[in-house]
Image 1 (cartoon, rainbow, N blue to C red):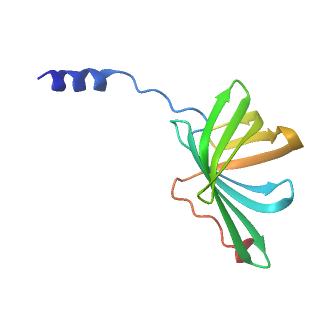
Image 2: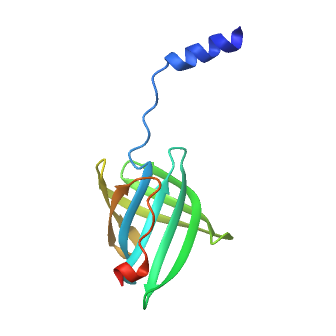
Image 3: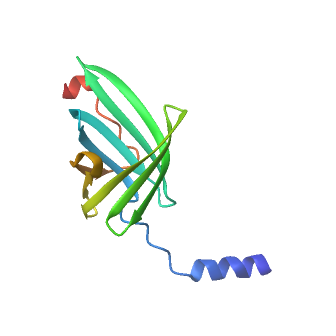
Length: 133
């Protein structure tokens, strides 16, 4: 009976809104390669997964990162834990310029490199290299 009552109380509480960056985002460009692609999944619990694709002569070179993200005012901090399954910790800081439900703009602070990404469906697939190179 207590379990049923607890579930009813929880169901009646208002749902917490997901942070504005939570979701799946796709974009192009890295400081050393303007045609590189990335697909970032920012989970509401502060975890993230990134898929980077670099194309060379139509061949994909993929890299996967996992870690945590946090947002303090307009400062986005990405704490990378693993790269391609290997422990390679580092911290990247970005200045968030704007976020809408469909698009975000931010700058990688150390290199002053601007990114723009579009919100995509969670099952979005990275384009093949032969379509973009």
